Length: 332
Image (cartoon, rainbow, N blue to C red; front, side, top):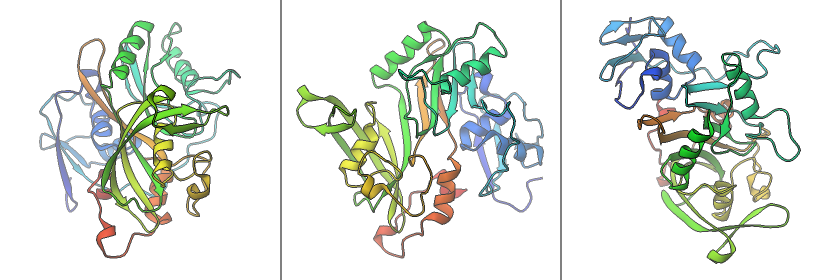
C-alpha cells in the first residue's frame, strides 16, 4: 500500500455537507477527477484514511480526516461505455440532496428546451434520472451553459429553492470559474474586461460602451499556460450574460477554439476538430439555500481538453512566453 509513488495528503474540509462525505465523492470534489477514477484508486489499494489503508468507496468521512493518495495519472482515453439505451441519458451527478443537485453537463446538449421544444435536454435527462427514485420529482433550471459548452451546473428541485439560488446569482455571489483554450498567445498574465453586451437581429452578442444600449458584463481572466500558438486561460465571471466569455475573449483577439460565431476565422485550429467549443465550466461555489453551508464543486476536464493538452498543442520553447501556472491538470 502506498509504496513507491508520489503520495498526496489532503484533509477533509468543514464545508462538505454530510451527504457528500463518502470517500469516493470527497476525492472527486477535491481532486477534480471522474468518480470512476476515484473508485479505481480506492479499490486498487491506493488510498489511506488517517494512515490506514481503505478500500471502501462509501466510507463516511468526518471534517479533519486525512486522506493519502497515490497520484496515478489518468490515461489519455477512458474505456468507452457499452452502447445501450440505458447509457443514453447518463449524466454525472456531483451532488444530490432533497433540495438540489449538481451535475456535469456534457457538450452538444441544450440545458433547457428552446421554442422548438427539443426532447433531449439536460433538464429532461436529469429529471428522468430523479424520477427513477421519486415519480413526483421535478427539476428547475437555475443557470445555463451554451449547447457546445460543458461543465458544472446546479439545479433546484422546487421553485422556492430555485428562486433562492437565482437570487445568489443576481447578487453575483456564486464563484463561477471556467477554463478555455483560446487562439494565439495572450500577452498579459491576467486582466479584466468590462463593458456592456447588446444583441443584434440574429441574436449575436456584441460589446458596446453605452450602458443604455446593453447589459453590464464583467469578466476576469488569468493565463494558466501558454502553448505554441494557443493559450489556456482561467476565467471567472462576475456577471453571467449570454455568450459573455465568448464575446470578451474574441474582443481581446483571442477567440475560443471551435467557436463558430465569434471570430470564426481565428477560432479554427488544426488540433481542435471537435464539434464543440473549447470552454468548460470547471468549478462552481455557492451557499446551500437551506442550511447555509458553503459548497464548491469541480467538473473534471473533458477528454478533448486532455487530448489537446497532451498531444494537440506543442509547448513553447524556452523563454518568458513559456510561463506555466501550477494547476491540478499540470500536476496530473
